[in-house]
Image (tube, rainbow, N blue to C red; front, side):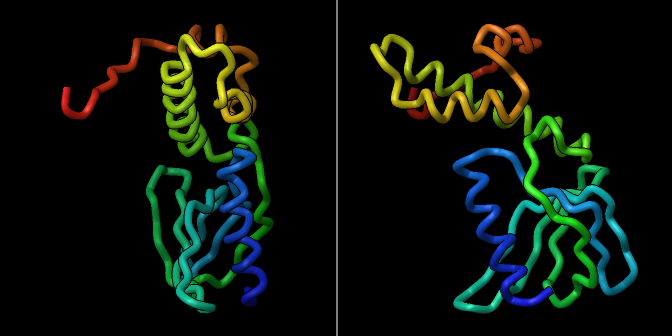
Length: 151
């Protein structure tokens, strides 16, 4: 993959922070022959104009980091919402992360006339495939324990 390909991945990952979702590749093959299907790309690191590592989660839930020179083939990387990801281990992990974030946003904005977090909350709910705040609460198996630093 050339520099522009790595830059596109990096930019895509940065955009997922704003629009939600993730980047999933149909497969990643390393120079040693290891092949990982439905790998979700989590990080692309660079210094200056040199890309040096790719971080991804495989279907077993193992987070792997490879030097970019060791990546032989990266097949069909595309942006997907969390609900459409084929990597079920990542999907479960990401849903829990985003559910926790959404609940925290609701807690912070409680009692406010108009929440400045509405756009982010709507994006989180859409990303995990939940249609309403009531549905979000219904998906909870137990109430999360929140800790306050210094309390």
